[in-house]
Image (tube, rainbow, N blue to C red; front, top):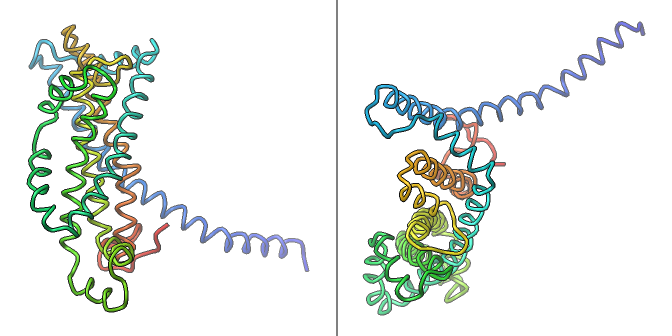
Length: 297
């Protein structure tokens, strides 16, 4: 066989082998762009309006985006930003983990014990409707300015929200499904584990997302008001307010917003999508409306 024919044959084989890989890579790139473009566009629009307001001097004390970015860079260079951000994340993740365990367990328990739900259900709904700023003074008077106060506020902000969401999710499980499980021998704890929890799982994940939001907001309020030995991002916001430094205030607000959105987008939202995809309640990545859904990876 001539050398040129062998070379052309090898090129054809390589093209055939790389075809599926290139197609998968293009699909992944398109998927990433489809998810990244809308939030980036929204962020760009907000920055443009912000810069316009600064340029037109709509407020004398409103700094531009560049000044706020410089303030964030300065805080990072001085070594105060990373510990504050890490401390806030650690507090919220620990508080959220405890809240998830307690809230889900309590919510499932109340759905099985109607008399207890009648008593505690309105209490949990009332606490859920309270702003975190109303919980902080109570915790400070009871526990003082300490880490326990901060964690207490996070728990009081997240647990009722998760518990109420879990009860709502369980209430939406078809009773016929539970009766079918009971007739097949899945009753009591076994039925709750194998029938109730899987059936209510999409609602449970939604309850956890809501609990994270309430917990993060409660944490920022607690750090804003409470004086602790290890300050967080909320303390940065309070310092900016005390100094009258608008750039520091907006820098803290941007950090709070960005951190909350990143945790939501990178951790909780993918978990919810995977649960929904596994139950056929949402299109898989790369699928078009009316088209065939691809596998979830």
